[in-house]
Amino acid sequence: MKILIFLSLCATAVLGCSNLSKLEACNKPKGDCSCQAGLSCVLTKELKLNGDQIPVKQCMPDHMVVKVEKVDLDNQVADEPRNKRWLFNKCTTEADCMGNFCCAFSKRCAPKLAEYFTCFFVGTHQCDCGYGLTCKVTTTITLPLGILFPIKQCVKPAA
Image 1 (cartoon, rainbow, N blue to C red):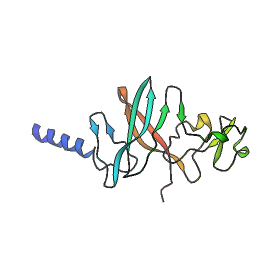
Image 2 (cartoon, rainbow, N blue to C red):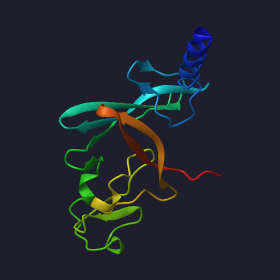
Image 3 (cartoon, rainbow, N blue to C red):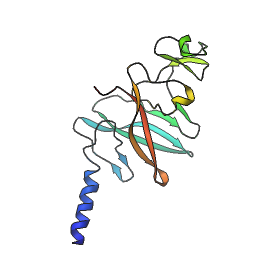
Image 4 (cartoon, one colour):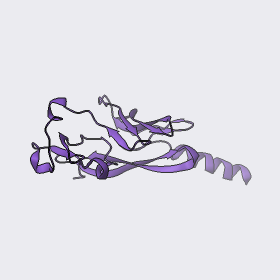
């Protein structure tokens, strides 16, 4: 009976770490999990928490080029690539900026967040997801000490 329970627990652990769908976290402390056919476990983010770097891998379409986003949780900012020539445009509201740009920190026009970028700090920098994208929790990762942390990303709405 004990062997049957042990084998069923092992099977559950293996099944819970395979056939993961798009955007699900696939890196686990004991190794990467397998994604569904057509998806690969790819590094998408590097979180900084208490000075430690925490890699986040997600199931993404095969051969998709992913720019690794750096998120500093210690300083609560998202490292978003910016087109520098627009950073000098002063603003007080989004209406002062070009289309698909926002008034970041109520001071400077900046591009809205791109697809798959973290939208966790929208309330801080006041820069929402780009046109046609919505901010939603796509997966949850486990930080050190067992703390669950939701990953919110700009994604296309489900059709």
